Image (cartoon, rainbow, N blue to C red):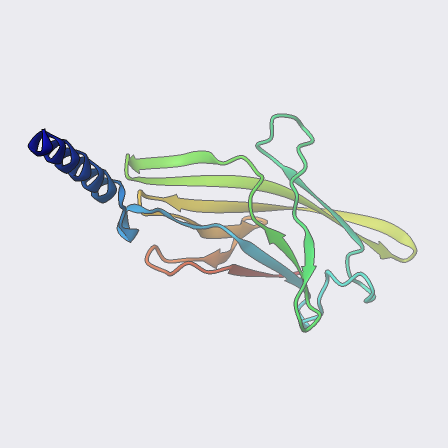
Length: 174
């Protein structure tokens, strides 16, 4: 009886040990996600155009998902400020992504398109400029990352495939 009990206990311990080892994971099996964008808008003289307190800057903005389900599909892009008082938009996610190409099941390119309405006062009249931003993403089993950003069809940011995860900084000169 004691031998049978020891055998059952040994089988159970072996099963628990096997489950513990097989449920473990290594870092290489995890996908790195890198999609945060900090977007600064300046003029050619370097003035922060997102600081509404400065003359000539934008006082309001709205961001819309071009691929959204409806014509008006707002995207949350909060306005934030750095420690040295520079304003920027923080884009994390929210716009729909569409496949641009599928080179293989393990290598795809996605993109999102945003319409950004920027408002400022010029000669006591409100002027609204609507710009476009396209964000391209690289997807493989090991990484999902921003690979390129186009602003009004001009490349303003690129990232190599082997670049480490980081907050991606985009500066637009208007």
